[in-house]
Length: 164
Image 1 (cartoon, rainbow, N blue to C red):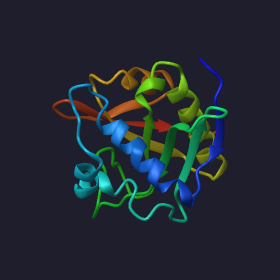
Image 2: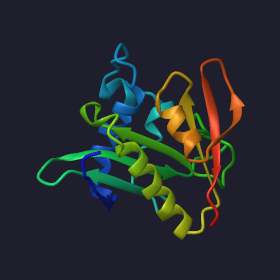
Image 3: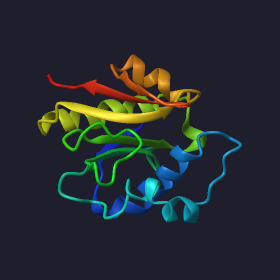
């Protein structure tokens, strides 16, 4: 993997997080949903709407002299507005996006570990996510301690216990 720097996400990173949400949704080469389509869909938009709330946690990967290349963030969604990987109001849901040209280089793993470290330091005990089974990232999540807690037609909800 090429070296990347990791920094904390800030309120000014909202537009980049939207970019990374678009990357995450469009992980399949044949899927090409526009930024506008994704933001118009409440099931996706709530992952970035109002960024950065007090309980939001995120990290951004950057390559020196290059724009940011990926991000990972956690949001507490509620039963009234659940995410795809929702398990309960007290378990934040993970989103990771990496620019297509940077995938397969270990950036996702670095981001995942960094955001979980930040969450652990803030006292978070568990983290959830949703991943389509065909997505290469499913193997990453399993290797990093996420376990399937619910399965759907093409996707799984996974949870990791991150307590130290």
